[in-house]
Length: 248
Image (cartoon, rainbow, N blue to C red):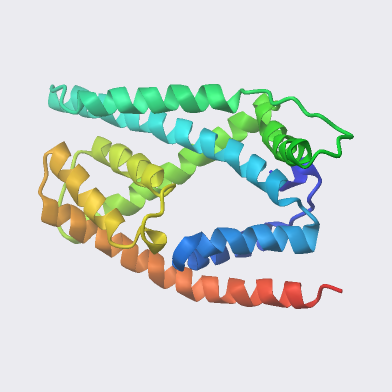
């Protein structure tokens, strides 16, 4: 994705930045995102607004893919349980997905050679945004990768519920994972700590299980996530710090 806009980033560097951002987002004000933006600005000379435009377009693709996968999960429940509960959630999924898909294809015009501050800021943002929105092949690749990420989270939830001895319809995990990823966009508490677990519990109740199982399974997944994030994320922060110190 970064190489599309001329930023030569290696796989290991990208991985360290991702995990470092996840660790930093446990601090207030999504500090991890700010750290990553600053890293690309200082090390790779990537404009803040171009970065924002690039990941703004990527976020719309993530929203569309997760919502569509959630629709698959709902249809799966309807087919296996011969019921049509949570119809309201399907309407929400489809509405959000439609908006995200339309937003992904927006073609923002670029105005070059302007000295106006607002126009220059808009131009920098649109350069990042159109790097994705004008490349259908790249959009499809990102869409598939987001689906795989969501399926991996579904597997994590399945393992968490298995640990506490709770068996759910497999389609339920295709609802829990996408919805959890969607709420991660809005960080009310650092890392949505506590809120994510309660949301999983409430969604589990809406699907037909009990609140305690949902919260407990969500807490198990969170505990493992925090452990791995702090272990690998600490190394990532050291890597980021060293790269920043080496700058002239």
